[in-house]
Image 1 (tube, one colour):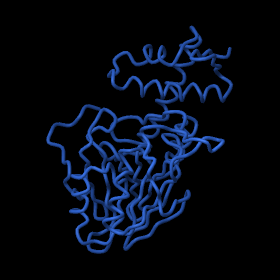
Image 2 (image 1 turned 45 degrees about the horizontal axis):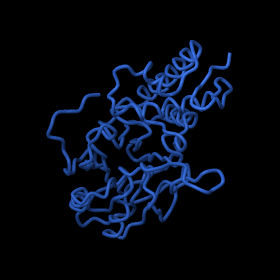
Image 3 (image 1 turned 45 degrees about the vertical axis):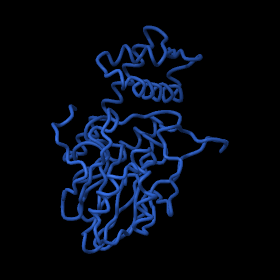
Length: 293
């Protein structure tokens, strides 16, 4: 999806529906579209929750403080701990006194010796409370239910606003692009299972962290599942022709892709290959992958 024309509503508090407002952070990039969208849930005169506070940029924090005004902040929720989503949680908690609630901290390797991911993650994220799948957080006039949606990251959550049928999807489903699934923390099998989970729901609208609202969510999710299955089939066809590395597969599969996005595409291809290996459909030797015939 091409970028919308300037000016973007960076720093402006926009009312989306009676219980939902949005503030766009100034961190546009090839990976974040026009930037991270922070959501305020609840009525300003009764108390609010903040979803995905975003990067700890001073101008963004100032915009959030202005949008909050004198309202009580009952919780600061994070869908996951990438650095464009959670770093502002700590300074916002210090300003408001609200607890940081939502996803778990950065996952560790199986032997608990090291993080499963790297630089894109906020390693300083420290939640007051971690929400389990289906667990609810209530505020004045609203209820948010956590939905475990691992795949993009192992700790990803979505939040369902019970009163309006809205779902805050973080990076699991975005309004402008498919999500990057980057091993070792990202998992393609988990990601597809999480998409199937959302497809089985009846949410009215999605509010993603990047890109426009999704007004036909089940249709979009169905298309995303189909897209991933097509990519999987394409990888298997290419490996049937000849063994290949992820970099070679990216060259064959994404001929017109922005060069800045090729490393991310290689990660998603690798995630597909790992899933195929797990299912007995592919084998690797170093950087070279072979289809099992």
